[in-house]
Length: 90
Length: 138
Image (cartoon, rainbow over all chains, first blue to last red; front, side):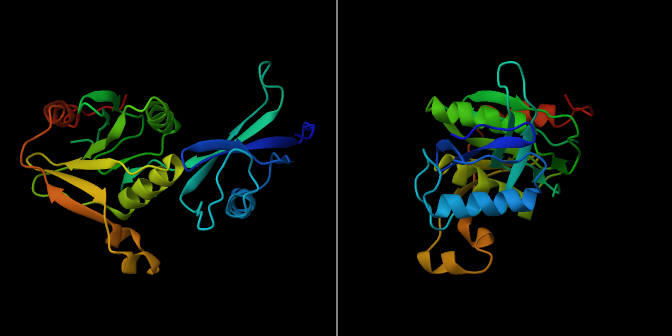
């Protein structure tokens, strides 16, 4: 895993019942659309250690959570997880 | 009337009452907390599904937001779940189930979850309906 600069973040993805990180950090302020595109490409091509290859992976209904660095975790973290609204919520 | 939810375990018992801030008569907002509960229950192999309430009476039906959430959560878990929706007098159960020929349609979600009317109300339904009568989110 590359060193993570203050302007960067590790990207953690949950998919297919497993959890893994993108091999390379991304800019912490990268847009949600860009992050979803990178994650989709990586998961479809088997580029995320810990996740199974998923050629039809679709992250359009996933959300991006951003967590700043802490004493315990000295780097920013971006978590990619499924959305959970119900009813009329978008 | 205000929407409420409950995570249900494999024994049919409530694991977590979902009463998020910002819930309304027509919606439950996105919630990282709910996702963490679902993920933890999945890892513990105790997760059966999730139920939420709809306002009013009659046979409820899922919204577009409902079915896209069902599909996203199941994709993340790699596991199909049971999804219930309760009105004041009916409960339906939705499960993934579709002929293969529908899975390549442009919008497969509405073809993919089949509803059945639950004739024997699960044990948690009375409490879900009671919580749905409360006016404040928690």
